[in-house]
Structure formats: C-alpha cells, structure tokens
Image (cartoon, rainbow, N blue to C red; front, side, top):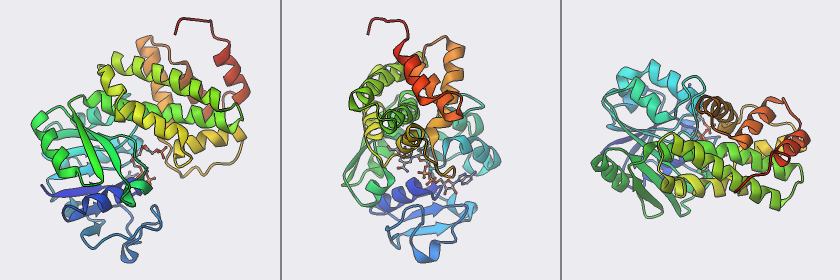
Length: 315
Ligand SMILES: NC(=O)C1=CN([C@@H]2O[C@H](COP(=O)(O)OP(=O)(O)OC[C@H]3O[C@@H](n4cnc5c(N)ncnc54)[C@H](O)[C@@H]3O)[C@@H](O)[C@H]2O)C=CC1
Ligand SMILES: O=C(CO)COP(=O)(O)O
C-alpha cells in the first residue's frame, strides 16, 4: 500500500509523521513554502523526517493508491469536485470532522457522490494533532463498509503508538466526529461564561443524547456512538483547551476575540445539524443554540436560560 496525505494542515502533517514510521509517505499541501525548513508552521516544534516527501504537486501525490483526505469538512466537496478524475479509483480515507452545509451530509457521502468508484473509509476518534506528532499513544476508529479493505487499512495505518479499531459503520463514525465538535463549542461556552464544571457535565451528557438521537436516525449503530469516534472524541474535545472548538466556545463565553482563520468545524456543522434536525423533526436544542450563538444571534445568558427553562421531561 502506498500512502499520500492530502492536506498539510496540523492533522495531515501529524498523520504523515506518525505513518512515516512504517513506510515513506507523501504529504500534499497547497502551500508548502515552509517545506525547506522541515517544520510546518501549523504544527510548530515538530521536525518532519526525511521519509516524508512534501509536495504541492497533486499529480505526484495521487500516484499513491491510498489517499488520506485531511482537509476541513466545508472545503472537501469543492476540492473533490475539482479533482475528481485524480481520485476516481483510489482508496480514500477521510479524516474531516463535519457535515457539509450545502449537501447536509458527511464526508463519506461527498466522496461517494464525486468519486463513485473509490473505496471509502473514515479515520476518526480522540486525537490532537500535536499528540500524534509527538508519538503519544492514541487510539482511533477506522470505518470502512468493505470489511476486507477496512482490515487492510487497519493494519497499514496502525503503528506501535497509533492503535486503530475497526468498524463497518461509516456513517456512525463520521457523525460522531462531526457532532462532538458542536457540543465542544457548547462546553467551551459554559466554561468561558463561568457556569461551572457541573453545567459542563450536563452539556456533555445531554449533548451526547442529541448526538445519539440524530446519528441513529441517520442509520448509525448506537454502539458506534459509545466508541472512540463518538463518546471518546466528545470527552476529549469537551475537556481540553487544546481543542479549537472548545476554545472558540470559551471565547463566546468570555466575549473575547477569536482568530477567524482558525479551523473550527463545529460552527458550520451546528448550522447543518439545525437544518437536518428541522428536516427530520428531531429536537436538537443544544446544537440549535450553538448555531445561534456562533452567529451572534443570542447572548450566552439567554442561551442558557432558554435551555434551562425548556419543558421538564424524562431523561
Ligand atoms: N488538528 C487536530 O487535532 C485534528 C483535526 N482533525 C480534522 O482534520 C481536518 C483538518 O484539520 P487541521 O489539519 O487541523 O486544520 P488546519 O487548519 O491545521 O489545516 C487545514 C489545511 O487545509 C488546507 N486547505 C483548506 N482549504 C483547502 C482547499 N480548498 N484546498 C486545499 N487545501 C485546503 C489549508 O491550507 C491547511 O493546510 C479537520 O476536519 C479537522 O476536524 C481531526 C483530528 C484531529
Ligand atoms: O478532533 C479533534 C480531536 O480529536 C480536534 O479538535 P479541534 O478541531 O476542536 O481542535
């Protein structure tokens, strides 16, 4: 199996470092002006080994048979549409955590729509780029509907410090990764606003209930949601200031400025979730509130009051 990573942001670069322990890896980025230094400014302090070929030549990168797509979720559809011919018969592994706002689908469906002959997989779970790049022990979910291809990917992408668990539930795995970002914004907001750790625990738990309700309605298996890609990543992202989604939430809570160039997948996904929930007639009060908070349509105090004064119900 030959591997290229498409997207030289923090996560693509971290994956390149981890996987280069097994074999040579190609890392493609649209802006690789930093390549001569062997240090990506998006992942400072990490020196890239010589076994990684850094390139901005997409033709060269797509010589590999297996391509890991490490682009932000809202850019994936446009990127795949523009370059579909290069990706047509590849094994495509998405690492994006989001729901596309225009199509209201996850990355695997975007890939299926643009590259119908590709083998599709999803790599997701609790894993900060900086942790992976430093070689810290990490466990992820590898989801592929084709069990044979999934098994081959699981073995090829595992290393002594990167342990992959396998599932055929692609939809469940990618929805867990997308939805946890929305709840992480809510958790960050609660902490930023000083509502306390008890309120955060409530947001995590009720947020997980929302995640499970929507994902299972969309065909996910409940046990996938309780795995690494769901509960695992939700736990990480709602409790660590390493998370950009959590920090964005904190900035809403404290009314501090936030660098708009930072990748925060949960804001767009919250809007996508609100639209999906309306279409399906599902109640997603926390996600709906995150969508309004991120747009500045409601104050943090009003958001919390609205959530706390909803009609009382069974758990
Ligand atoms: N950073 C992390 O710890 C983790 C990130 N992820 C996911 O990985 C995906 C990528 O995130 P990061 O690498 O962290 O983001 P990043 O913000 O560090 O990098 C994004 C990269 O995508 C490139 N890019 C953006 N639009 C593009 C386009 N239209 N064409 C080509 N390249 C484009 C940018 O130039 C940049 O190199 C996201 O979906 C994120 O949720 C998943 C697990 C962990
Ligand atoms: O998905 C992640 C960890 O698993 C990274 O989270 P952020 O995108 O919020 O930084």
